[in-house]
Image (cartoon, rainbow, N blue to C red):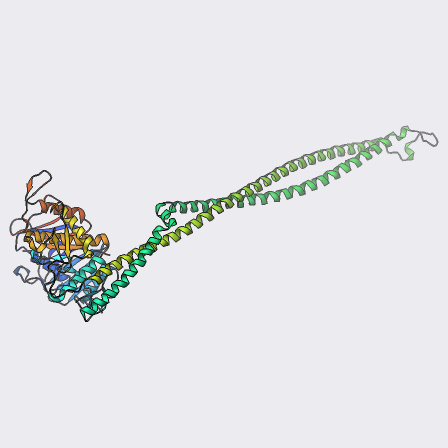
Amino acid sequence: MNRMILTKLTLSGVGKKDAVLTFERGLNVITGDSDTGKTFAFQCINYILGGENPPKNITEAKDYNVITLEFTINDELYRIERTIGSSKVCIVHNGEHLIMPYKHDPANTKNLSRYLLQLLQGHSENAYLKKNKQNQKRTLSFRGIVHLITVDETDIIAEGSSFQSIQYTEKTARKSVLKYIITGSDDQNIEEIDDVENENIRRAGVVQFLEQKKDILKRKIAAIKEDSNYQLYTKAKTTQLMVEEISQLRDSISLLSAKITQNQAKVDELKKLCFEDDAKITEFEILNQHYAEELKRNGIISTYTDFLEQLPHLDCPVCHQPITADVGVIDSDSSDALFEYFKIHAVQLKSKIQDLTCSINDIKERLESNKESIRRLLEENNQLSKTIAEKQASLSILSRNIATIRQLDAMKKSLEIYQQDLSSVELDIIAYSEKVKRSKQSTDKPISPLYNDYCSEIESVLKKWGFRENVNVTFDDETLDLSIDGKARSDWGKGYRAFILSAMVIGLMRYCFKNNRLHPGFVILDSPLVSLKERKKDEDGEWINDYMEKKMVEDILEEDCMHQVIIFENKDIQYGHQYNYVQFNHEGNARRGFIPS
């Protein structure tokens, strides 16, 4: 639910200086002398929020005819403008001006009531509320909740509750509005009735059906709560840890896979280098063999040359005569040159063979190193693959656990739905079990359990305000009023009636905030403390005439700092605290009143 925070009230007229009253979040007090415009300002707020009756006609307000109220919802500024006597208002938001009637219209969303309700609820659907004993219905209007948040100076000390109407035809409708605010459930599904006795029979049948439905829901709730897996689930706090572990495993697997890819790229590169080295070794070995054969041939030629050099000194084996150059033997110079050539060539061949042998050995050494690197990388990849497989197995187990947890989450949501349905059924059983009122009502006031939590909130408020240390509050759902320790609020003095009603209004706002119920987010009280006369002892045992007033102010400052409480009061209740405090005076340098003099 959204909430409204009033920020500024303005009364304006042609040729007139604006009368301005500003408000803040938390406590706001407008105090001062009588007849300074406090009640008039209260009436202006009531009128701008869709009231039928314009502010009272006072001399100071002559020629003032336009009332403007500014407020924020979720820090967005809205402004309502209404000319006194007009049936239409102008709403300004984000530069857009909307002209619409102030009266509620269930069939049309373009009216002030539906507009404000839509802002608060976040949707434009109507809430249907019972308006009479025949279960005829009407839709909720914004004016239907104004009496729950604003109390004027007459109603605050009255014996009757400001929540209830003095008009008989409005009593059931007022009850339905408060019931809707307290429970959040409307009366859309109730059927109209003609005969009270027949309705009692029908209600008995509905109650029987609801009792059966309640038993079914209880069994479903018990089945979930007794489930052993669900019990472990509710006690465990490891879901987030598993999610984090899954994320870590996925990251680790990704890194390992990237490492395998990187290693495989190195293996491919090394295999390519090994292939090239194998080819070079083969090529170099062939070349080396060629050089060796050529060296061998070179040796044969050198031997032959040496033989030729010896021929002139040998005798012919046939005729035994000396062999001379005439028979074709080469001369000495030629043989020396040839011999030197083959000698040098042999040295070159041996050098090449030696170089090739070194290169082949280097390549083979590099080849072995690369093959060892390939083996090592493949072994590393194999180990990485095993690690990935282990992590994927763990990931699979965790994923199955997460799937189980999701099922348990679904069980938890089902449990919440069943519990909500059970609460709704129990409320419906209470509603349908109410006896039809007879012409002669019992002297005992009916007490409805629908309002137990609300009463507890009021008890808390009264305790904090120093009313009593222990206080028992009950709620009468016919008069929509309280009893304090068995004594009806109407039986207390007017000072206490105003004080208790203030706790009733502020307690409702706090209840709605805590339970996310429909509430505008502010309350306005006119003269809640002026009639209160009470002496209480403080913590030191000293008697203090304004003890409860101080406790009230201190509690509102602490508890309602995010809400808004606006108090119009005739007495000074600042007590040294800092908050939005406006004081009107007839004389002096202080502000003279709401309307500029």
